[in-house]
Image 1 (cartoon, helix red, strand yellow):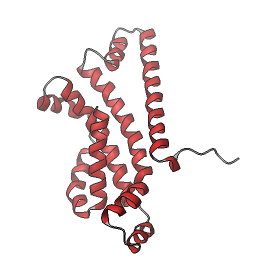
Image 2 (cartoon, rainbow, N blue to C red):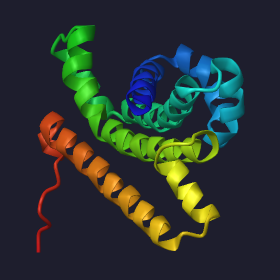
Image 3 (cartoon, rainbow, N blue to C red):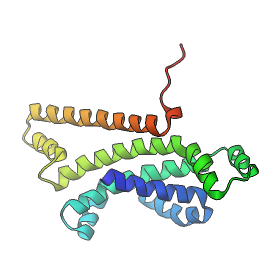
Image 4 (cartoon, rainbow, N blue to C red):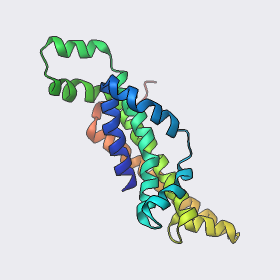
Length: 190
């Protein structure tokens, strides 16, 4: 849920900031100030705001997923080839048509990269939040196995984390193939 919330908000704000110079001027200093701060450093503040419970953990994971999606989406929009935009304008495309048929597909490669990075950061944030603020979950299990020096449980937990990471990467690859088949990996030319 945190990944979906943070990535969606990052996507929408990234598209808006990529298309609007005014929004970029307004939000760029805020993003530059907040982005370098480690996500787990926000967790105590989020507990104060949302209380001890699932909402503060969800907010921490969302915050982790937000920045990679925002920055990659904005870079995708800003990195559009001006020739493509000019071509759409010369054919009389409306703003909606320009967005749907030129800007969005042209920005999709970096958006999907942002999604992959966001999912990794959200997964790390989930494990980190569970390590410091939960009695259940894979992060809590990892921390407990380290504290009790239970090496077999530690390796088992790390194996589960790796398997979940592979599953998450496979899901994003599937989304890429379905949503943007022209971006799917092609076999290398020998």
